[in-house]
Length: 198
Image (cartoon, rainbow, N blue to C red; front, side, top):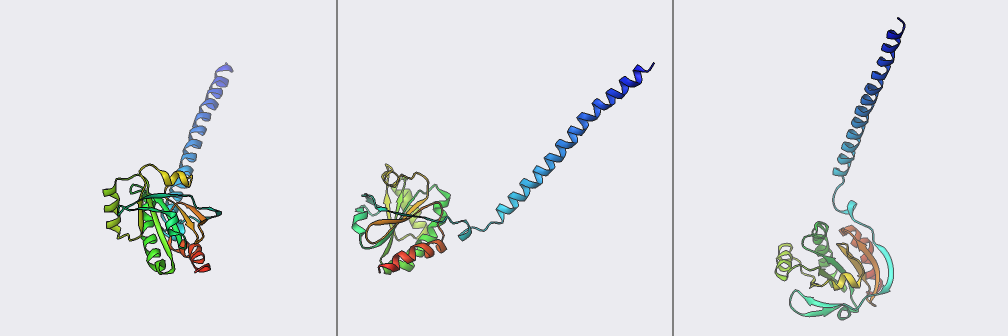
């Protein structure tokens, strides 16, 4: 007669374990849900521009030999621009951060062109007419080169887009960026290179 109550008690305890686990999983799910939602809200509140711009890495090596056809049909080389400070930017029309940084590059170029600064934007494999249309839509006036075979990416050993390199007047690469550049970062890092030997 004592067995049935004991059996019922064991069964009752066995039922409470899955319920406790279920409640625990629900609570864990709610915690994860609100944590992820909070993280999404935080990332959505990050402003674009300066706060998202990457900081360059200081480097020191000779600029590679690189010559490509420009958008205007002439073959140009980095050696042609010795004596100027050059920002070489590898990009593509399909690359969102590449598109995002172009207005900053254009604005910086317009402000410092008179100081012996120029930009060489090397398109990574897009058709010429597509590159021309893109340049026209943003009013880009700096040098644009076409690179159908990835020569620039190979020369700088970096396939991530966008990537940029600051080359001083003596032909030495001084800074390397991978990712979107802001106007503030250009002023902070490139302007001193322009001014040091101007």
